[in-house]
Length: 240
Image (cartoon, rainbow, N blue to C red):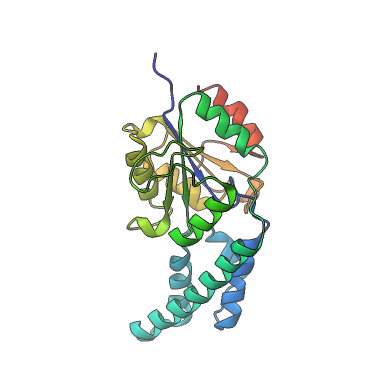
């Protein structure tokens, strides 16, 4: 009998990459510099989205009725500041995997299950993070690589980011996975859960030690919420 899963698609910041609210802090630096109105609850609720989509959503609300060109200018200004702050942060500070992630990757590798990372980040900062972790080795931009991870998909490489399913589909194409019912999605945000559900994955799972608590993620459709990546090792062992 063939194995139950061929591919696991992981989120990055907050799921496989340790995030102690750094991304949120970078958002708020850009928000404050450009006089954009946003609360921490709103920003946290949009974690996992394409980052430019977050700014588009907030500026369209704040400038409702204003000219499209004015809104686009504000969005671009905020986004460029955010990119500068975010890249500076990841260049200048340590980047670490979350507890249990490397062990889970090794388990999947031994079982010949492909590993893909998807993210709300754009390609440039994604590559900074992957390089600092050493996860960029063997990666190919179009096909499955042969390093620790097999594929990486950034939100600016698909027509729409989370919770749309396109990053999962691109990861499947890169890794040669043909049956979405043999794909598992794991992330720490409501948009991660939505991405997995919209893609039709076998399981769309949440980890609750990232940006959202168990109570927050439980409000969204999911196939299981686990406290950390160590628990996913035990969960996935039963499928392999």
